[in-house]
Amino acid sequence: MNRLRVALLVETSRGYGRGILHGVWQYIQEHETWSILYRPCGFGQVAPSWISSWDGDGIIAFIDTAKTARLLKQSGVPTIDLLGELVPKPKVPFVAPDNQQVAKLAVQYFLDRGYQSFAACGFRAGLRPMLDQRCLYFQQQIQETGAECALFTPRGGGKEGPSWEREQEQIARWIQSLPKPLALFTCNDTRGREVLNTCQTHNISVPEEVAVLGVGNDDILCQLSDERLSSIDVDPQRVGYQAAAVLDSFMHHKQVSDLTLIPPRRVVSRHSTDSLAVTDPELATAIQYIRRYACQQIQVEDVVKQVNLERRVLERRFRKLLGRSPKAEIIRLQLVRARELLAETPLSNTEIAYRCGFNSAAYFMDLFRRKVGQTPGEFRQASQSPEHIV
Image (tube, rainbow, N blue to C red; front, side, top):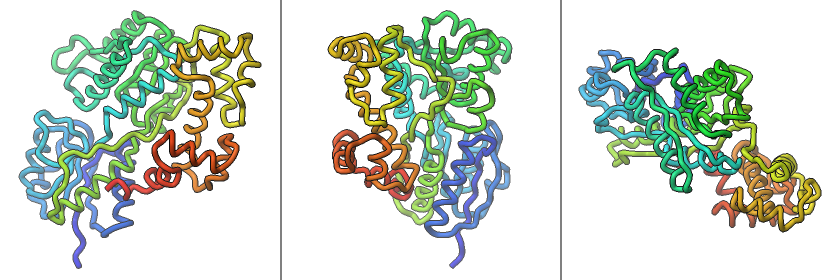
């Protein structure tokens, strides 16, 4: 039996593209072996002209120019788009991170840290429509909480936009004009790094004045400076795996969905958000204590001992700021850690229960099912096995 020939036209200078290739490779290892033709295709680059007459079986591509879209259409080969950047969009299946869920995760992350001032920073409007969408979803979901969210849009410079020096000045003035402490969501890690550089150049303190959160969790980009960038892991390996799965069905003449969205995995916290937007010193002490010791079987009474407040006063202030009790915050952080261990390790439920500070594995498993909506085993299977999302 002849192998199917698949072309991968993917930009791989960043972690996202490399993660996608890893996911495609994993699918191939677990299923039918393909003959792979790889050609790097960066943002704004046109696919090689020979692709229009290529006698292959399938293509997975970053389609972000009209010429690339035309070449792929001329090929007549089943194609999967990984960007969704063109307007109008090519009439091919599209697989990508779920930007609405990315924004939701970012909003909750900042709310959990007590922030009340919010902003989002993208690129020039229309330059990267899917990244614009992330910022708009973030703004919309913040507004649904009753708060406001400032949105940065570069000004001037015509079609090319302003120079980086001018844009950096615009970003700095914009940030300086906003109330502090500020929770600032950036559309991707590249923009997050640019914001961090701007803050450093203009003596804006990160994370004390501005907490900066990126998207993509590109390990190299996120750790290029002292203000290491916190970022949302959008699970590019799963995006690649699912793109391969959809293409496999497409090549075998099966019906496939036009749109497949992959939920983000988690927020990876680093220095750029290592702060709490809490002006009440007693409450800040309580929250910091819980975050440090949540998985060490602490009780609310232990938290009360750290502050000069009665328990009922502490609980009232806690609910006013975070919308939940100190006990609920302890449990939330225990479950956050449990989800990480389930997704990233082979540890047993008993060991995870112990490491997260639960009294027993039975209690942990029951609580996890009630709070998460899945058993620990179901959650682990969905997190560690990409084939379960096909």
